[in-house]
Image (cartoon, rainbow, N blue to C red; front, side, top):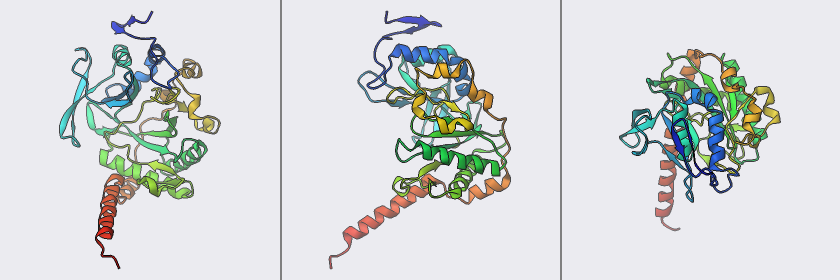
Length: 322
């Protein structure tokens, strides 16, 4: 049987492969998401949601705007997108029915915003995304994560860590709502810089990829209304891995590939380690925020560097031959 119905949602073509290399069917995606819905939903609830869908025979794509054929009961929030100069109608995935509807739409990945719909100007977390230069450098990611943990401790902060479901990890630090988006972004830049400075032989904050060498990038740009893949979300990657919470003590003994739609449920054993280990919202020291405001915004810095390089290339091309 290829079709089913759950919570009033018709599920179709369940026995089709999810995507090339997934090692899973659409049914296995639906079953996994349904089994973790009580743990996944609290981490996406009331947050503007982007999803990565994989339609048959097509490459994965990120969907932000809710499609016109979405059911009328699906909750949305309209958010002004400065980059495209238009309003985007984001879904709010607040219940099992909505999650099942997305699963039937072949939505594999779930990327909630760092802000909630009722306070779009107030991020709830600081996030540091650790991105290694190559997929098989997870040991360097672990070393860099410990640098971040030390930088957090030095600033009087505590965070939790999860695999990204790709090749790195995400470190989440819950913050009090009094912290503005600009100040949270500044604090993120300062923490990234402090962590990288603890061991610049393995960590860097260089936004331009070819300036990183073989170092792990401590990415401070997941700020404000940015999205980060949710804990327990699958990823549209070979083997269908899952972004999975890991205790600091266990980081040395895991790899991102340990956690997939096939293994995650048994490893959870009914628990919700992301919620259980998440600290209470924390205040950020004013000195850390002030320090961060002296650090250039990486994307702006990279834009200026790109213009400088383009000008240098044009100047070299226009120079007369000797």
